[in-house]
Length: 138
Image 1 (tube, rainbow, N blue to C red):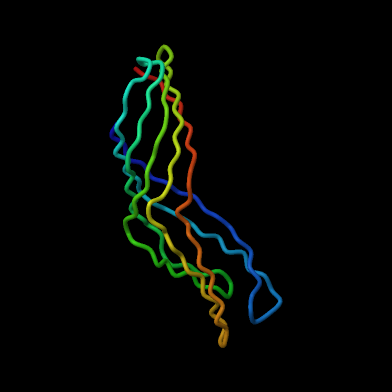
Image 2: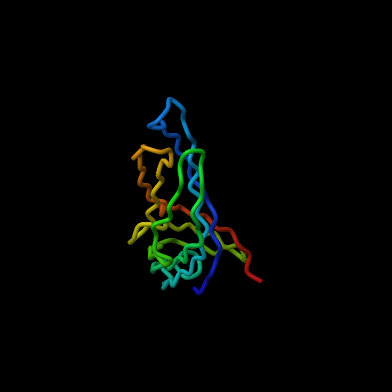
């Protein structure tokens, strides 16, 4: 099942600034190209099949600023995860569900850049995903 796809998602966290009573909302954006290499087998013919395999991700994220915080992307340009799932073909309609987990982390570090502050927030942005798919076979 060869595939390649572009993934774009973001997560938000609100933190209290060390140097003041202000709060900053940090939005960690993730842009990547995913290449899953899945092996599948038919369990009940085309009615039900299962697949599993690794997924390689090329990280496209860059450093960013959030009020008093600077995001330092301390990440590998390539991370590896895994996918497992089930697929069903009824007539020409294909329904699939898969879970994606991580073998390696996508570590981000947010640093408060106000003079004298040493506030750092470490954040793993390689989250687990549950994906649903709907297709039509021509």
